Image (cartoon, rainbow, N blue to C red; front, top):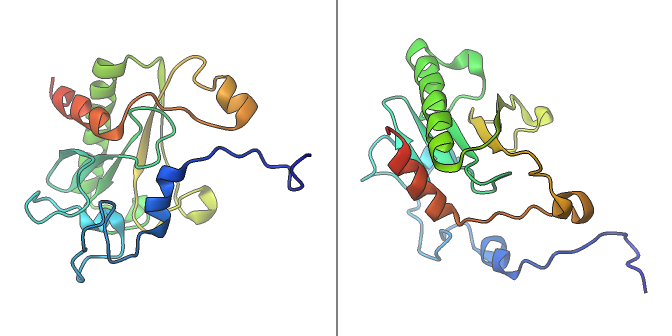
Length: 179
């Protein structure tokens, strides 16, 4: 019997923890403080002692930081963004603009040292229509690319396979950040 809606399905029961987690609990099931910002990027602060949801932060600057994407396109996919909640590139001040670009350069260097990609996609999605799922807080994507990274799973099954856990990727990139 064929599937009446024509969709192929990949079972991912581990995602139910994310889907069913009440908003007052974090990914590990611990109670979130009630005064947390709604924006997940704003929960990450300059100070690791007061930061929340920052286990994937690779590096912190004065005005900006680099964090792994929770739903990466490829291993090593990270984002560089200002601490300040702004939606558009034109809203960044001079220091934020300079540091976002500097952290982007350092991200590319760290990923090159760790993973030796063949190329990168680097860019911004400004606004929801442009593809920005969290468009209220500007973030620049740094996506490593390899020849053939759209392998048969992506082409045939519409499924992306990632060979490394995010925590392991974070540790490798943080160690290589200033190298």
